[in-house]
Image 1: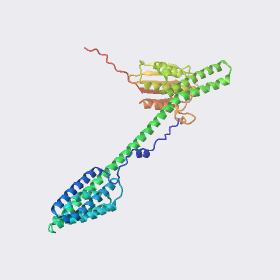
Image 2: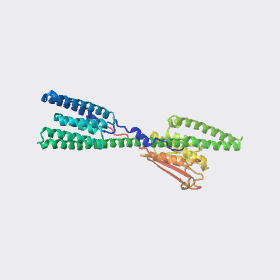
Image 3: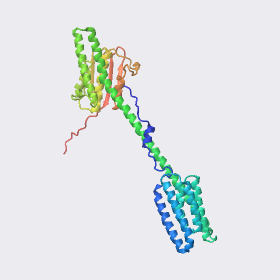
Image 4: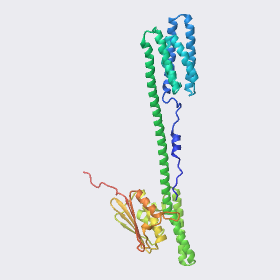
Length: 410
């Protein structure tokens, strides 16, 4: 049975799992926007009140007009930045108006902090550095003018603060971008892992179904075909009629097995009886003269071990029927303290296990399927045979005996 899988591509799974950031240009900084805008509004109102209280109405008119224009431009740039749309022209218009305002009225210098963050969030690259640097320079010029050109700290302070804020902002952007990339890589890895697990699960399930079909339906149909061909050659003798009846019985059993595969891949006809009887019944489906020997004290085994033993007997007995031309076949079931053993012996033609043909469309899956069943449960599987000397198929599976405390309590 083919085991190719057309699974989902890992890249597609990763793409579907990778979240798309709301604003790729400003990773991790959207949470401070509201605080910055609110701070600008509070500082602007405080600066307006301070200026009005300290200057004549004639001076207020120009400054209030510049402050109103700066407020409108600030709002326009903030809205465009929030929508991820370019607003370079609006931003530089705001910086120009703000430079005139802060030089004419240094009382508005405190609003430069909010304006600096808006420059960095609304623009990127060189334009952001130019706008932020212009804002810091205008603020330094305004404060230096307010000190009548005598306080050097008023000139250098805004420039130093602007440089420090630039470094801090760049670090925040770098860390946020690194976190976003890491999140994307984790999401892609999770998508690839999920796709790989789905493919592995699909392959394992197909191999399991392939073994079930080979050990039941395929073997039974092959044996039925041999019986029908023999009956056709010898018809209408009594032997031909017996072969026909046996083929009919095998086909009915195959029909039951097929229905079992459709419904939970079980074997109701064999699972309801004790293990030795079930094994003998499985062998006699293909080799009516098969015998059973039991060594040790029989005990229940797990469902997985029981199922594997039944399938090994069915597959081995089918091989005896199809290839061995044997006159006798014996199934030996042994119970050890920590394991259960199974040997299927026939005195047929035998073969060279090392020269056995690999699996193909013509067959060859039996031994491989038996070995996989046993080894998947932690057991050991072997085949001993030689041309003209019969064959022994042997399996040993872990099956610890149930431990019971037989000591009487005082």
